[in-house]
Length: 109
Length: 241
Figure 1 (tube, rainbow over the protein chains, first blue to last red):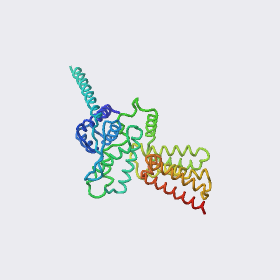
Figure 2: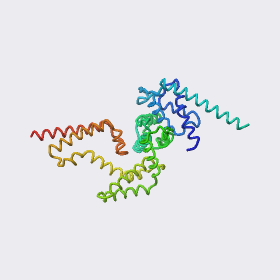
Figure 3: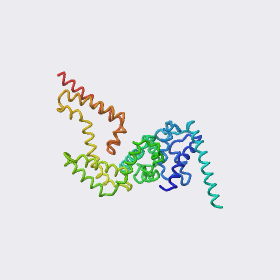
Figure 4: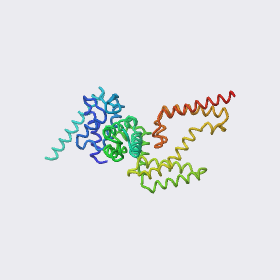
């Protein structure tokens, strides 16, 4: 597995939680929002096992709602545990990016 | 939404692959994922006029990607239970078995030979043909044509028929003659229990007979229960008369 693939897989869970931060979306909408960001998602189906796992871990909850366009839609939203997890993950991400940036600039000198 | 038969068959097969791909991850519910995939495809193709064609479906499936690539990085970690890890390693090994046309033909030959050698090594050969055929269907890295799929399904159909036959007729294997009251009663009770189990766990039935029973729903289990109850009724009437 290439390092970009590994990097993307690690970042995707964080991206999914950030998309859902303060929003209530159904699966396809989450994919559409992630699709707007270049290079983040290669196989769009990858998102759905992540959503299922985040739900079983208690970070997301789902509700079914009737849709005017067809079958009922499953909406995802974050739980309190999910918001807490997102705060921790964003902090980890910031530290990681800062450390790598520091090393990059030190190497460039 | 209407589908052409080819598109419908392709999508059912894809959903089967999705189920198999995520089945090894204990924190992912295959039904959950398939439901989301179905909604995704509905959203992409629902607005199209006319039935969904294979070409249109393939475009959507291409953006979804191959389910075998959907490991989200959780599998293979230290917290992964030993059983799950063993299944994952088995799947990886199965993926390596996937090949081209030569293998499907070899599998049919192996299946036929195994039927002739049932008194000695036939069961082992049949199991080998069956496992390899399932690997080809779920793990092949090259797209399989409709004819290839038909050939690959031969060992799977033989094993599925054996499983169904043994599962449905177990009391007769034990009790013998089907027209006696005890045999009918045993068979009736057995079908009710089997139907109850199948209606409660349709996923296991679909997995055991994959991909020939993707259509299986709890209502089919309930139908078997109904047959069982009818047989019990018949046994009662026969005993009274």
